[in-house]
Image (cartoon, rainbow, N blue to C red):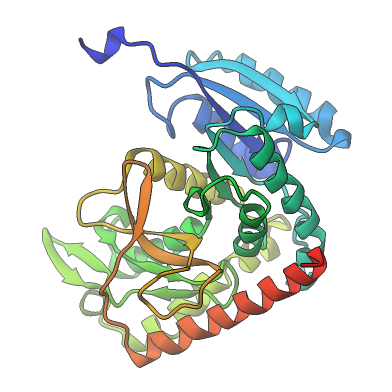
Length: 339
């Protein structure tokens, strides 16, 4: 029977921080079918804190006014028992926001409590098959806290967003070479979604006039690739805040869509993407019990770290440095939890 005659059951998708600016750029794309498929009806659940509920009502009005056929219902709430019930997907955007000059440690303390509560709510109310994407910073450690607070949901169902960094790296290489960004593939973001992340193009390929060329050969500027390229990607978030006085929203929303669509539909053959996933059992010598960004391939809604990529000394040092930061963040976060 052709697909047109099969009416799928709606899936329940939660977005937290739903009255915020990332969500404002994100919700339309989800509701019109860009993420979960053009024939997949959606029930959108929107969670925010009580003072934001009037703003959230305005967001609901706008979603209604878009007249989107896939959007079956919109549920605004400030209650976790409503927000987390029977979820198929949870996109945890809401967190204590980072302001210019704010230390990540200050962020960490404020956010541990939030993500402990949300992890516990996932554990209690959501489907055990729920796919959870943590966006709110510090994303890797928030994701780890959420997963530890939801012991009945597999660790593999949790991931954090480093796709924005991945897209930034891809785009920087494309601009440098003078090709469109879809001609650049297999860049990698290793480690933390912070300024210690390691954007690695040693395994990246560029399609130059129909021929696949290694990124280093396409760019022909090793000094840039090992210097300014890395620092540009690492510090791009801060540069956007400095320029806009607001954190990345449009590009963050696009990266969230890319990340969740790849979980739902898989990665292209021969391509891998970056996402923060549970490190235990990895083949790259990254310490266990971290949410660390790796290159992954995805099939049937399951990710697998791409194994066997050769790691040179330059890369090893940078991979270890970002792991050290994640260990420190994790241990600090667990001390805030009293674990």
